[in-house]
Structures are given as C-alpha cells and as structure tokens.
Image 1 (cartoon, rainbow, N blue to C red):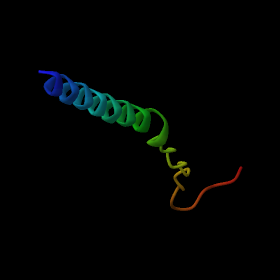
Image 2: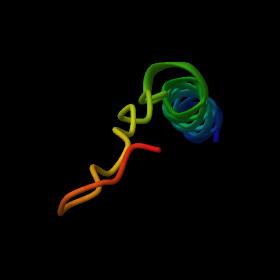
Image 3: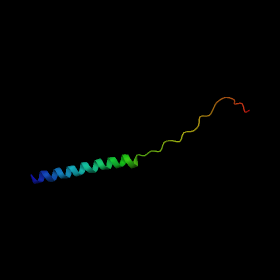
Image 4: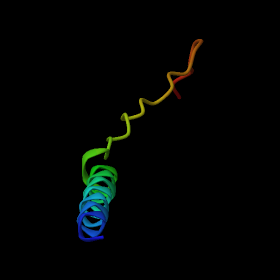
Length: 49
C-alpha cells in the first residue's frame, strides 16, 4: 500500500509539472508578434490637385 501511494504521489507530481509547463509556455513563450501590415498601394494613375 505504501509503494502504491508513493507511485501515485510521483505520478501527480509529474502531471502537475507537465500542466504548469504547458501553461507557462502558452502564457509567455508562444507570444508571437503580429506581422506589421503594409498599406495597400493604389493602382493606376492618381490625379494630384
């Protein structure tokens, strides 16, 4: 019974580490900057008045 509880404790520890690492990665490391948008160039001739 004691070995089962130790195994269960280690498994929960591992799952907690994996979940916290995933959340940390999502929160801080996956922040991708949006690509800066360029203005669309107007085609054709333009009248300057």
